[in-house]
Length: 192
Image (cartoon, rainbow, N blue to C red; front, side):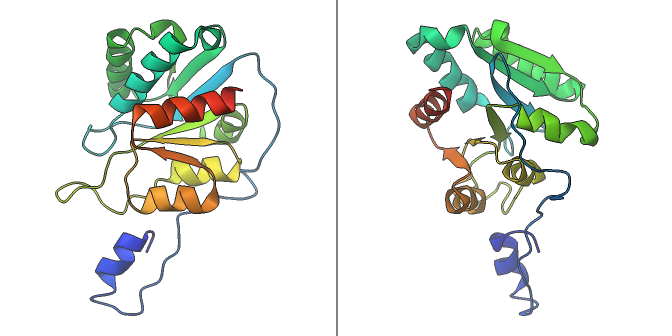
């Protein structure tokens, strides 16, 4: 199965359960250096509900970061490749947090274009939420592995405080942020 949490649950029924992460196609998702004019944070995917994927902490962190760092204002761009339902949410949050001018929303793109998109990203955003008793558990999103394959810095918001955070830490792929200060520090370190 695909996460340590799932191994723990399933091995109670079948002790021969093994962990095999989702992974990525190494012939497709590989690092490439692509120069860009903007410092770009990129998100691809859907946000079905806020209990599983909650971007609010990201928006709070970005709003604070831009207020505190005027230099970043001229360079930052946040690209969202999402479905129409998620687009409505992102437009609403961008307006609420006054970051519309940094936000670019586009429809989904074909999987064949994702590696190039990731490789021209300064940071890849993964949106999750803290693992909770009544919430989702053991989610190891494929988007994490694709960014890992392209060797792009990963900003996971909000940390699941579980398997995904541990894997990000073990691979030194980025940060699974628990608060706005961690978000700001990580983005600034990559910007510099």
